Length: 120
Image (cartoon, rainbow, N blue to C red; front, side, top):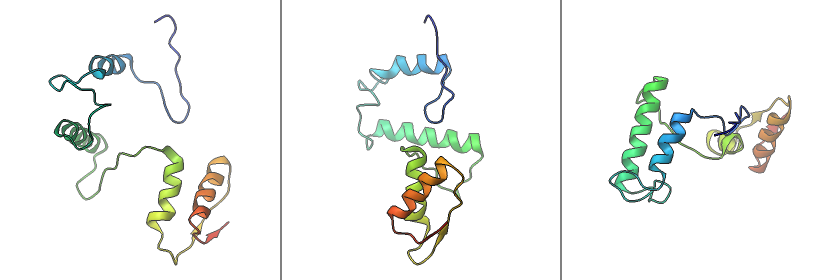
C-alpha cells in the first residue's frame, strides 16, 4: 500500500494491518464453511460459534461477569440515544438533559421522539 490513511474520528477507526489481513483471508469463505460470515445466517451454528467466542473475548478483556449481558449493537450513539428513553425509563418517569453541544442535542431529539417528558 502506497499511503495508509488513519481515521481517528468517532465511529469507524483505524485497525491494525494484521487484523485487516486476517479478515481479508476469510472474507470470501470461513475455513471449513464455504461461505462468508457476511452471507451466513445469524442463526447458523457457524455464526453462533463466532458470536459466543466474541462475547467470551469481550467479557475477558473488560472483566465482565455473568451478572451482566453483553450486547453487540449497530447504530452507534444515535441508537443508544433512542434506547435509553425507550428501554430504561418507565412511561411515567421523566429524564433530565443538559444541553452542552451537538451530542446532547441529538440525545434530546431522540428522547422527544418517544414523548418521554424531558426537562432541559
